[in-house]
Image: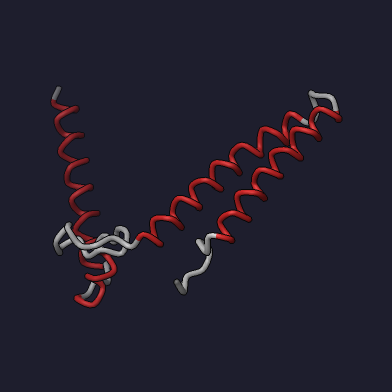
Length: 117
């Protein structure tokens, strides 16, 4: 029991020494305070939450999420190439990529890909 208590005290002392050393050695300055503050959606976290929201920023975020999910769907298609018939796999792949191209074309026609709106 005494050994366990001594080991606990030693561990606490060592961890406190390491934390103190990291505090002393770290090079934080007043200028770095802005870098450490959270940045969400272009808003200052200390300002009002009722500021108007940029719709264009939202649309670009949705486009990113859609294509991110589509990339996650393409990886299993590559893996399934070994297990399925080449004709069925190629028809499915072409249909999937065709749907992606239709989506890109629609977004391009709606000027959702331009930042200068």
